[in-house]
Amino acid sequence: MKELVQRFPENPLLQPADVRPSRSDMVVECLLNPGVFRFQGKIGLLLRVAERPRPEEG
Image 1 (cartoon, rainbow, N blue to C red):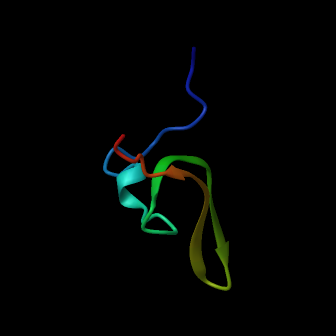
Image 2: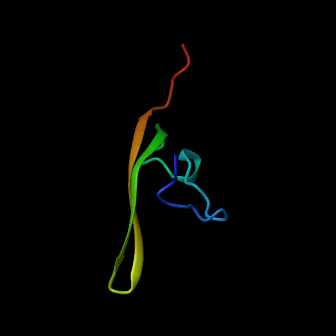
């Protein structure tokens, strides 16, 4: 199957460890639907972040 797009090999991929959770008792589980846009000469990145509560012992 022919690839429709080629990723620049030096571009890093985002991982859950690269994103800070919204609260200290949460863990980032995964990143979803990233999208890049250009607006007024600036480049922005939007993505959804899935979080879950940090597991408690016991």
